[in-house]
Length: 182
Image 1 (tube, helix red, strand yellow):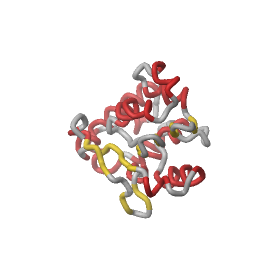
Image 2: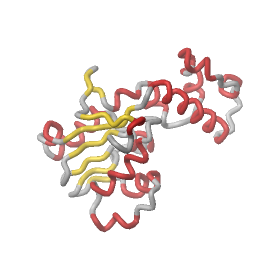
Image 3: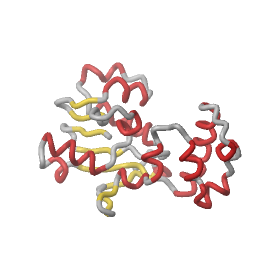
């Protein structure tokens, strides 16, 4: 999540949509100028070091210890955070996120899971034999239940990052396929 008071925008960081790259691009607009030159293009670096509330904006959710929740903040939580600052922010700021072709998203998620499996030395048979077809068929919950990752909360219902009460709240959705032009 990013909030810029100067440029009056709220960005919701979605899952497996190049949102880290978009985050890198927009984060300086939320941070005080003294931090701009320190950004080395690594979103993890930015998020871990600069999560907080500033006069210029907000970077992530500093109220949680869960790293994934600091990055991927559901819109309901974002509204609660900004309402504490000024109740008019939510209605007056431009809200956007990145979305991705569902097929491309599934392929990206599949390879991300395989990478996580390898990095975490997971030995559970269901996780080791991760098959793309099973994931696509909706069987991937089996794999998530066995992963020890803080991303589990956001992967189960990723649209909740930019939906509230079943309604889309963004003014604009950057399409991954049109990342540069959008």
